[in-house]
Image (cartoon, rainbow, N blue to C red; front, side):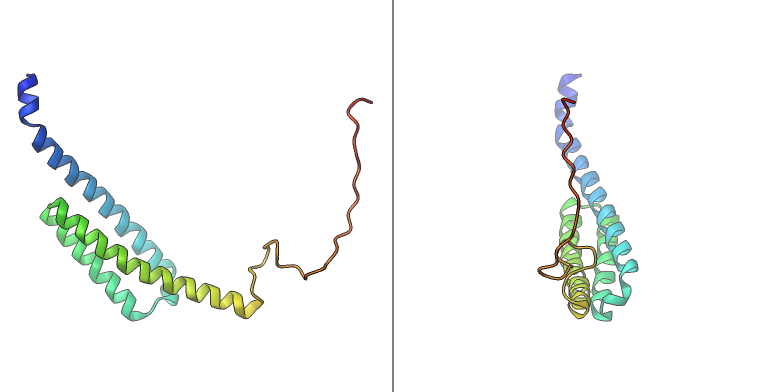
Length: 127
């Protein structure tokens, strides 16, 4: 029985790599589609088309089943999603600059030199 398990070890390794690649691909597709939906107004049509093509390519590779092909398609989708993230970042930082530089609620959003009046009470625990 041990010898039989050893003889199938290589097959098991290939199958495990394929399953792991498919899982990574599914996660990447889900996250990319979600980000694309949530930020569609911030992303150019050209970038959106590139991402959709990369997703279609990845799905095609997943149906073929080759771990190497799946991993290569994941890399292409990752590169396309980086372009998307860059556009979202530019849109977000552009709005912050137009509003005064710092996002609302940030520790540096107050005016410089502003003094906040507060009372301090020291509580002695030995009373």
